[in-house]
Image (cartoon, helix red, strand yellow):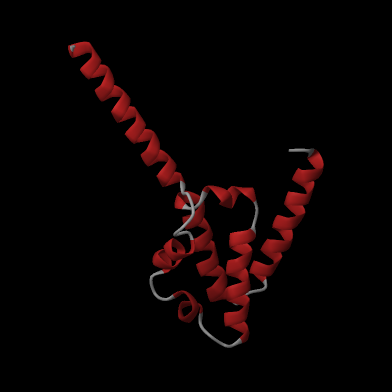
Length: 116
């Protein structure tokens, strides 16, 4: 990644956060919780740009413009809303599960090989 890419990424992030700050307060609160959730359990691609987060802001801007409360847009279970958004994406949890399974399989194979 070049310095120019990093500068462009920061500009993109600042513009994105300016859109978030322009949302009504209830939308901002839910957005921040969604952001935290996605950074913890979300898709690997979330660290590669703001596409998913920008899509959420688009949805929130539309909801706010039509006078809906944020929970009318997301539903009461915000975590389920997030899970639906990332349903087909590879997550950090998926990577860890694959790693754990590989380690277990290696250990079992090693144990079997020793017992022969």
